[in-house]
Image (cartoon, rainbow, N blue to C red; front, side):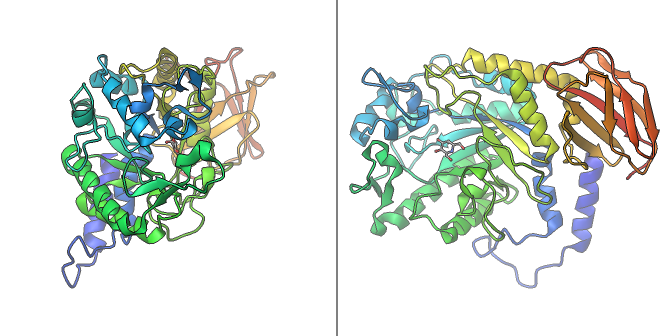
Length: 463
Ligand code: FHN
């Protein structure tokens, strides 16, 4: 990895033209970087493949229930789902006091799961900040009995334990006085989704966001800014480009998702065309059908049906299903950002912890087939998925173990020098035959893993 970075750096120094006139950061268009500069900036993120998403805020207190009734929305949307006014929602802050919040344990859990980065909500649509903002009283330090910054110790722990940390930040803000609920909206139940801005206060709100983003970037040095809530009709692509440039002027090598601007196409999440702001696409609760050469993307997904904690949501995906999704994402060249919704007491639900532990166990045996890999060079087979790590290693992820115990792989133009199956105890060589029609790998009777078992093929040469 060091070799690749050093080579890229050397090429960059030798090929980057010196600017004729020095530009101030305020004037720079940061999207205007050379492909090699971009590759260098994105490399750690592309190699990481797997991250933890954390949705945590005041909404963890009602946990999906309002006035004794279950609400129709996901946990973090309760303000909209139950049509709660700002005045009625604000007092939740008085009940927010997480005695069991243990950021060191959160980061350890991510590491045990094999997650290389964490993205946490610094401010969701409800406008409440999990850090001590100088431009708002509506934050964990000023408005809750807990009275301490939640992000500072998490950032410290992430740094100490070597995990990259990113911040989610919502552009739409149901609490800021610049915004209001459209009184003519047909569906008042989801009134807060019908968010409007007072035109004469938009500039003030953008300054507010920039002030908070400056606090986040300069105090906690995040690796990623993950915007959301950009679909409101008052937010424009020009606003997105300006915000993108602003954040990169604060930290040049930060990585920013495409929800900073208007590129995202619905839940498909990828850009509707070229030229939009942001560094990567953001499919939500779905995985694209195929790989997307040259496009960086990350599928974010819940383990049950909610992002923010809901006590009644027990619709959990199995660990095997989540592992297969990770494999599917990696085989198409993307990242997987898997969500947890901590409870109001600061603990992560046991169901999430056990699933993360199971994924981590699988990754300890099979991680080389996921991290630092590229999309499959072949069409996806019916029995599973492929990834490729470098020009001489191919991984076959077997999801449906063949009854005849023969794995058939398309022909390749070079010699296969070794084939092994990855197990919890290391790798075991397996017999194979290669001909001009393809490769046949002879598998053992039982699959080592119920989720996906991995055969590694090593080639004598690049192809
Ligand atoms: O409305 C949000 C939702 O609450 C959650 O944060 C997800 C995560 O990607 N994003 C939004 C919808 O696109």
